[in-house]
Image 1 (cartoon, rainbow, N blue to C red):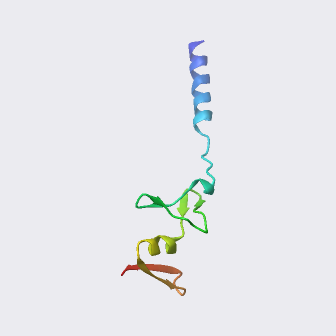
Image 2: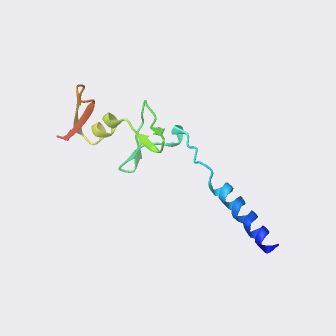
Image 3: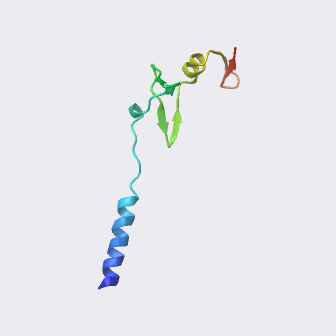
Length: 79
């Protein structure tokens, strides 16, 4: 009897703890130097990777922003 209870407990714990995390991208906000940045585009959660608008972050850090379309790159250089 104890073995059945232990197996049932283990199965229930496995099912309960194996719930995937669902996060809405509206939950994510960007904070820089203790202040939230106002973004036109909300950060996006794509399979656990968070994508943020880099131009806003670079400009908030007073960096020069350059887009290289051939490479699909955004470069931020400190002024």
